[in-house]
Amino acid sequence: MTSFKLFYSLLFFICICFLGYSQQNDLLVNGTIVDESNYGIPYVAIGIPSKYVGTSSNEEGAFSMNLSKSNLSDTLEVSSIGYKTIKITVQDYINQKEKTIVLLEDIVSLDAVNILKTTDYIKLAVKSLKKTTVSNRHQLNVLYRRFSSENYKARFLAEQYVKVLDNGPINTEFTDIEVAEGRKSADYRFAKKKQTYHAINVVAQRDPLRQGNILKDYTWKKIGDTRYDGEDLVILQGVGKKQKWKKVKLYIGVDNFAIYKVETTDLDAIYIYKKHFDGRLYLSYHSRVWSSNMPLNPIYQKALGLKKDKVAVSYKHEAIVLGIETNKKKIKVSSFGRYGKDMGDLDVKYNATFWKNLSMPPESDFYKKSVKELESIYGVPLETQFELVNK
Image (cartoon, rainbow, N blue to C red; front, side):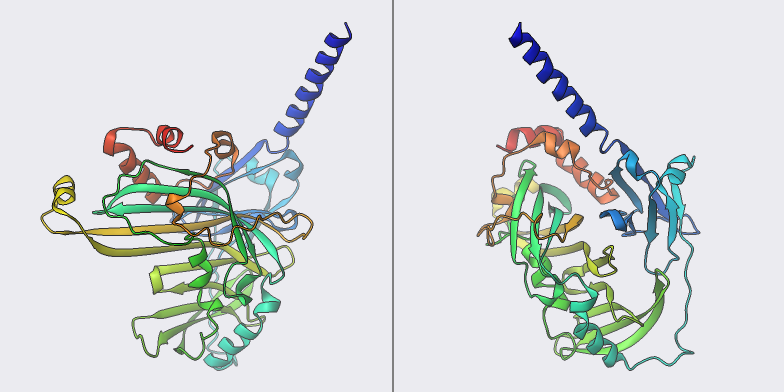
């Protein structure tokens, strides 16, 4: 009798715990951010800064995140460069019939005011990085994915949940990375470009802010102005002094000299920085594309139906920061260095439950197209590929 009581007591306890857990994140808040012409706005920051909760919209302006009922009275902040910030309670947003948020353009012209010389903005922005960014040790929880394409068609996907230990753009590289979870599709590639380290390290290594020579290696000029969250920004463009094709564009705050966005022709990369609850910035999104032509032997040429002995290949990388942890006691990143091999060659145990419960960003048009291409090669659903390919 005691055993039965113990069993049912444990069962009751488990059920209560499960119900409690299920109620922690039982609100799916999603929608689309558009401009006044109803065009989706990419890379918009949406979140509750004071609660360390946030996400970014995808390339079409769609967003999605999991919240709990305790967040109903909290205020969502929706902000993007060039637009007026909108604030709305979670409850009011959920009550809206149309899950669309329209951002109004925030027009400004700084020509009429006394602004600094272009090079002074660069100097002050670089000098202020330690103050304007999260520069103490912190953990970024990153959804990192790479689509590999051949002949303009996706032929491999590697997707991982990576814990990154970082000190911000004052450091040239990430301190450590840990691939906590991973999954990959079947590898249909014929031409394979390999890296001897994890591709997420390139995010830091090629970031112009971390290279330490952004002022002296470029010729700078002001090309525009805009606003972000009520602050005036100047848009500055640098052209490489030796490599004229190399260009960098910075969006710098006029008052605090914070750098909110970086665009570079090097790998067509973009870096988006978002405000932490204390006002300092941290990297929230990065994308880049590597493309080239690689040689093919006659057998592979025939398989791909090509007349040339080379094939166009490209790797599209995305780093989507799902969360940040600044509390030293809560930072947990195991030291794995650079891993020493290509991310597509890492064997990570596939945890279907983890991926099902992860608060994933909405699928972009590119993502949907690439998945469809992967599934069409042999008619195998992507989820089935995950189950069969991964250990």
